[in-house]
Length: 179
Image 1 (cartoon, rainbow, N blue to C red):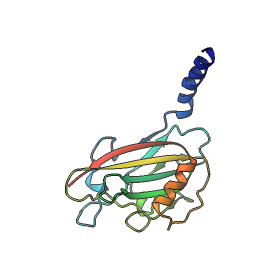
Image 2: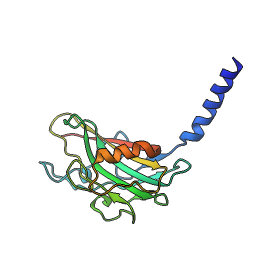
Image 3: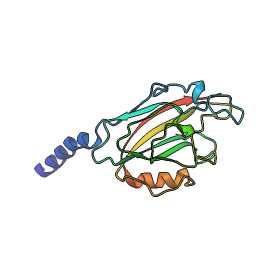
């Protein structure tokens, strides 16, 4: 019985140190808020700024060697959701991306944007079909490797597969948008 108690105590006391308080913040979007006109696609019948929001993160897990950023809409009527932005190989020394980085300007040296479900690299804003609002999950992944051996033509699913094997921790902001 004592061994079980000690095991539970060790687990409970070590989880917070492992999990930490890795956070993602933005001056442009809020968790639970609605995306602004600036983050909406300017195509497919939507008229927006198609500008990726400024994002910053803090308190990464120990051992972080690089970061990746993904933007995903799990509510897209595809059966597999919709990837709006994928960036990886962000150096560990970088803890923010400026607004508009999804256009290629402001992506740090060494970082790579790969193909989204729009068929090309870069940020593609929200543009759900008319109906209920969709969720847009902005996630920063702290990785245990300096680089993922992938190309800009890699699919978001392939990047996600690689992230799954190398993520030490992640932090997210979920915003909504509907029309």
